[in-house]
Length: 278
Image 1 (cartoon, rainbow, N blue to C red):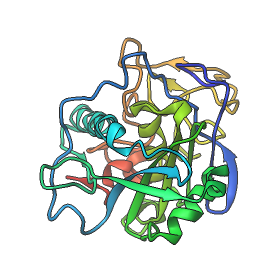
Image 2 (image 1 turned 135 degrees about the horizontal axis):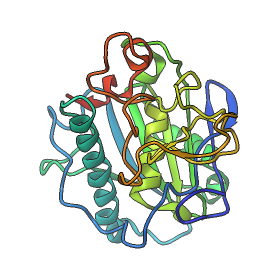
Image 3 (image 1 turned 180 degrees about the vertical axis):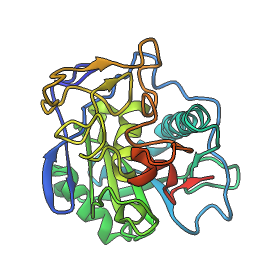
C-alpha cells in the first residue's frame, strides 16, 4: 500500500537488470494536485540538444487521441516538478537547479504524442520497447512517459551506482519514468523521475531496502516494506514540511552544497546530475 491516495498498486523499478520493489503508486497526490502550476520550466540552449528530460504522452492506436486535451495538464506537471527542484536547490545549499526538459520556443516542456500498437500497452516494459523502436532510445535522455492506460509508477533503465562523478551511469540514459492513468499526478511523476536521476541509493543514511527513504516528509519516502529496524517505521525528521519536498534534510540524495566529507559529498548526488540546469 502506498502513501497519499492509498492506491493499491505498488510499482517496481528495473535498474541494472535486477527487479526491486521501489516506487510508490502515488507519492501523496491531494485532490487539487493536478491543477497546472505557474510556469517554472526554463529554456536552456536550443531546447533539444544535450542531456534532457523528454516528456511523452503514449496511447494505443485503437484508442482516442487525447493529447490535445491533456497537454496542458502534463505541462503543469512538468512545471510543478521543476518548481520542486528550484525550491530544494535553494533550501539545500542555496543554489539554483532546474530540470533540463526538452522545451519549445516559449520554454514550455514539449509533450510528444506517441501512438503504439494496442498489444504494446500490456505493460510499462512493453510500452518502453515500443517507443524505443520509434527512436525514443537516446543515451542522452530521461523519458518521462504518461501512458494512457490503468497503471501507476515504474522507473527503469540501465541503472547506476552510488559513486560520485560525471561518469556515473545515472548521468546518462536512456531511463524511463512511466506513469499510468491511475497515478497521473505531478508527485508520482516527480517521484519516478527522481528514481531515474539516481534517488535513493541503498547506501544513503536513511535508505530502505527497496530504493526509498524513511525520514519524512519527503517525496521519495514511504513504507515500502523495506524499512530497516531500527527504526522499523517512517520517522518524521522534517515535521510540518511540505509532504512532497525533495530530500527532507538534504542528506540522502540531493544537496547543492553538501558539507565536506558528508555522504552526498562522497557519493552520488542528484543535485550534480547533468540533466539539471545549474
